[in-house]
Length: 205
Image 1 (cartoon, helix red, strand yellow):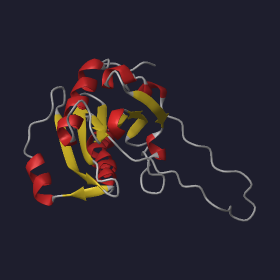
Image 2: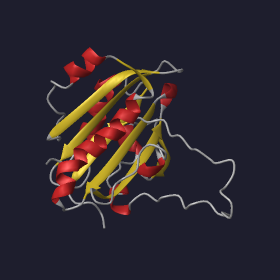
Image 3: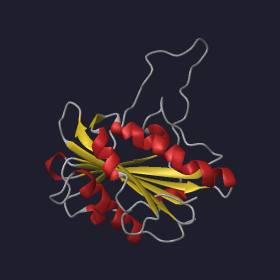
Image 4: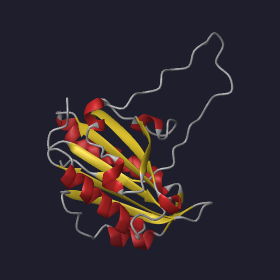
């Protein structure tokens, strides 16, 4: 099975409960991003001169009611949101696989669930998605999966690319709005290529 690199723009959703169950006086701790996975996320300078890092979080916080990393599949993960000109936003998620055969088989499927949640934030075209599946993977990726469309409410174009990198890495890159005069998968593919070729083969411990 192949690991995947994906650069994805994702809208962060924070759900705060208005009350606690009887007897509960404290909220559950917020998951922290994995240090090794976070070391694979680039600084804002790689994204562009006018881009800044907004936040670095655990992928579990992106959609806390809909997505959670399985410890049987991923040993850790990290997600970083970048903000740029003209309302542009980029999300990059780095996922590191465990060494089990289960991880090799299931990692792509689990990461695809997160990619699908990105698509849920906008309107997509089924025929366009089918055509995207026939495209070769971006440079540096051994396998790729893509989705693009128009974000609901803001009507901003978005594109997301999931990229597997041997032997144990998946990137998911999502771009909402413009990036370097491009949008959609033209933007997310270009960003994932930057990340795939710029990050070290071995993450920092």
